Length: 187
Image 1 (tube, rainbow, N blue to C red):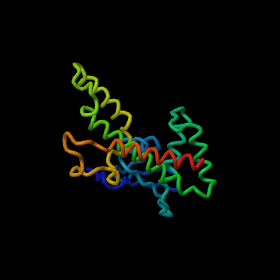
Image 2 (cartoon, rainbow, N blue to C red; image 1 turned 30 degrees about the vertical axis):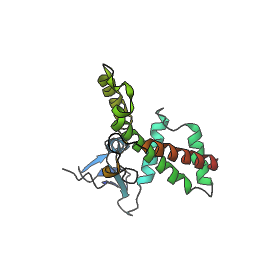
Image 3 (tube, helix red, strand yellow; image 1 turned 90 degrees about the vertical axis):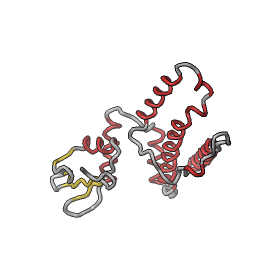
Image 4 (cartoon, one colour; image 1 turned 120 degrees about the vertical axis):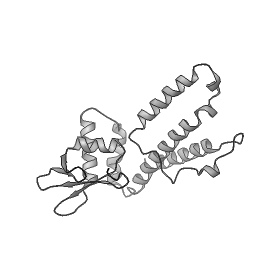
């Protein structure tokens, strides 16, 4: 069985064919996209030069999905990304995007964890069926995203005991407001 903690090494040959070093076979961009959707990290290197080509191929995968009509990024976001490459403040954009995705993952996991304690409708008949549907929806929406990011997770020992006020929602709202403020300054 492959070690899924380390990135899957894909080697690009001079013929531009991509070779999966774990399974000893050739793969396509669609295969690589599938590995990533399954939660696997990949690293793509040029066999001859040893150059890391991962970023180039990940951008190509995104471009192909966008060109097939599987649009995820709105045009205004794409415009902002292009502008960020031309701006001296470009170093802020990657940090902002990473923080945004980290917050999204953290917020989604907290919603799933706290759905019973936050929602007063939880005592309503049939709520468990509705909750299962919501959880399935959230899992489907976040299936391609890693679920753990230690920098943003609250250690279990610091979580409030039952009956104490949970201030995590306030903290998330504050972080979101700060990110929105930074984004407005970028424009």
